[in-house]
Image (cartoon, rainbow, N blue to C red; front, side, top):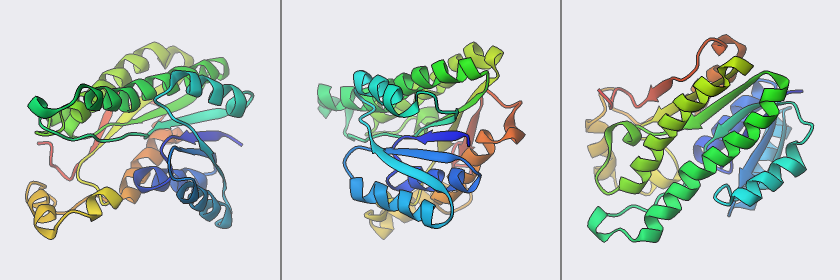
Length: 242
């Protein structure tokens, strides 16, 4: 059975992606940092539905931990899909943003994705096949006040996607990105109705994106149907980036 690795799979987008890939027949490895119970619940739900999944701890912001994780858990596996979803936010205006808040977001959201991509590529190159999908954001394309660190990291993911796509195409490995906009997750659920309405007003489709809709796009990019798609950024913002 082909294996799919989903980082940050304990909730939200990552959990939806893990469930989708399991339904598509992949043996799913989903990672978490601080929510072992939530991650275990995601894996258990997948297993109960007839899929194959396990939840394992991984701090993608530590390159040595990423290398050790791949060596221990994925050596010899038929790793076919990597979904770089793990990420954090440390929002704040530029003039007030602490150095560590900028560095932490870059370290986890961008450098962590690069490290996972590099380790996955080593496996996929030997097998001459693979799908790498990076979860970027509409703010990586448009920018966003109060999120200079997050927008920079997500924009960097787009550049990483295109560069890796060029390097790995000869080995039959595709590299693409999805760029969600306003998504219904635990983080956005705490926002006031007024704030949610203000976001909806900026979206031509007038609603937030559901995690399952992002998972469907990832499922397509991970499938054989997307074998000729690489270096692309698939927007999932309801027209917000227009």
